[in-house]
Length: 130
Image (cartoon, rainbow, N blue to C red; front, side, top):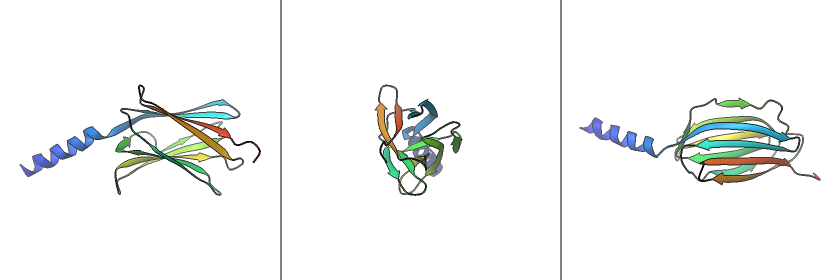
């Protein structure tokens, strides 16, 4: 009976988990790139940037999993060069996606979550005058 209880708990946790179904990159122009995360359900991601010699945009998806490639190279990207992902269990389960940003220019982002489509859209543009 104890194993059955553990199995039910594990299955219930799996049901609560949001699946990141796909991650895509589109180079709209020389000054605009879009990264889209398609999810199985609505989730509120935590998004922040890390500056310095290796600037990055970090997106944490709580209670989620991603079974795609751990590293997605961005061919022809000017504002972003790669998207890396990993699963973290501590202190809470989350999938972290890290977008490697251009080292040659300062990049800003705008995020939009489309609830009807369960889609997070990140739009990257350069900061002019810096």
